[in-house]
Amino acid sequence: MSKKLNVLMIEDSENDALLLVQALKKNGYLISFLRVETAEEMTEALNQPAWDLIISDYNLPRFNGLDALLLLKQKGLDIPFIVVSGSIGEELAVKLMKAGAQDYIMKDNLVRLVPAISRELQEVIERTKRREAEQQLRDSEERYRLLVEHAPDAIFIQCENKFIYVNTPFVKMIKASTAQAILGKNIWDFIHPDCLNIVKKYVEQLDMEVIMPSFEGKFICTDGSIIDVDISAGLCIYHGKYAAHVFIRDISERKKAQSIMQQHQLELDQISRINSMGEMASALAHELNQPLTSIGSFTSGCVRRLQSDVFEKDEIIKVMQIVSEQTKYAGEIIHRMKNFVRRGELSQETTTISEVITHALSLMAFQIQQFSVKICLDLSEGLPQVLLDKIQVEQVILNLSRNAIEAMQH
Image 1 (cartoon, helix red, strand yellow):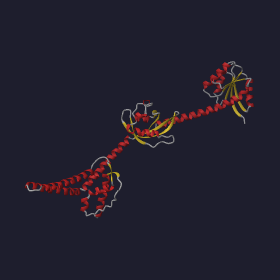
Image 2: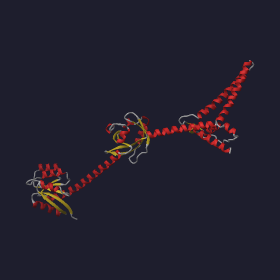
Image 3: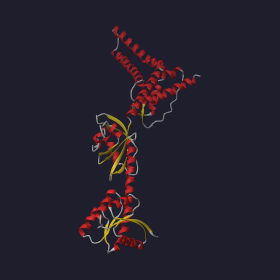
Image 4: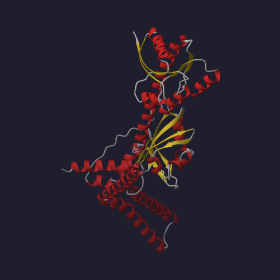
């Protein structure tokens, strides 16, 4: 099958041009050509598209091969340029090759012409593919750059622990003046010491295949302020080197909102416990009345004995020991109630669920007695200890118990 070839010939001899065409046709090319002799004719011809090849003589009356080659370069066209001429000397041939000619062939040795053309046409195809691939890469990089620059999250790329790319949201997030003010700096200078080891371990586990799950950390801004951030990252190739592609989201406001909500919940819990204490006020009064009554009775008796000067020392000591025990008992009751309505952060401790249930029901002793309710406990021995907020769990048990007692009265 014939191969079509559009050839621009810079040749003052029509016969020499026809000889070249004849040689190409013999080798299976279907030739379409235009012969020009001057710079003006060549310029006009180059304005026409789709030239596959330029074959140029070197010596023409008003033109030469070197000027023709320079004119082609000025146009910025990638068209194979092969000089086919008589003897011009080795020095001039080298000059032509350095200027960009693909080959130099003697007119009396055209056997090299067809292989040279085949080679250069293939080179054009390869160069075109490379240019297209490079253009696609540039387009892709530009699309990626625009996407990253307009992303809502802060993004940076680090290589060898240095910032090598940062987007605008990241610059704003850490309160830097410009991206240039950050590029090249050590990333560890911006990681809060509290999470430094976690971040380093995270970086060591990065993999090319996946984006690692995010985690929470803290960043130090350029003005020294600290922000809470959500961090995720993955490995990438950036300018031929392995690098970490890091996504950062400022969660300071979210953390602040969570803290406010948690504080409100603590306040609600405290109000709930105070309400519970209001409902158990009679139980509290009853529990305190017993030790206080004993204290009052025993101390009054001791005062009378001492005033009468008729007493036994051992008897007085025994009575005062009882008073001391009742005082401690009253103190324990008050301490339990104080802890129950305390306000503050959740406090977890290790205990057994049996201990929590027993303690919670002790707070309801009078209420249980008042309504003639019998509570049977079937608590297994040797239960494992658990980590919990004792007050919170006691609140749940109290609420369930009070509801059950109230339901039994209807």
